[in-house]
Amino acid sequence: MRIIITEHARKRLRDLRQENISVTDIMDAAMKIPGQIPTATRFRGFFSRSGRMFDLVAKDIPTGRLVITIIGK
Image (tube, rainbow, N blue to C red; front, side):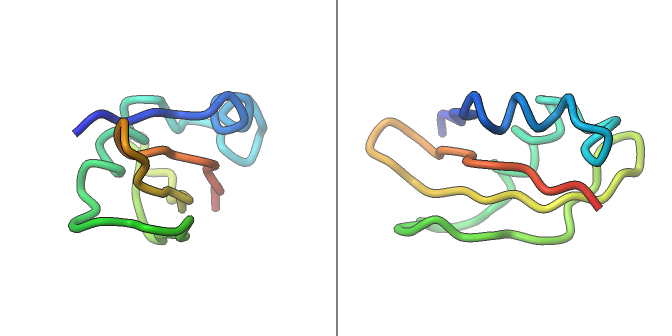
């Protein structure tokens, strides 16, 4: 499955709250979500390789899985 990360999500990675969360962490988390996501949905409780907890909002579109935003904890 193709993972598409929005510019908004990439920008959020530069914020202090999302510190130590990488694009690879986001892609791994998005791949772990089973099934189809017809509407934007928040998924909770992912961990980055550095140990930082985060949530992500994702939705499936015809070209792949769109990661809309990341929320660091």
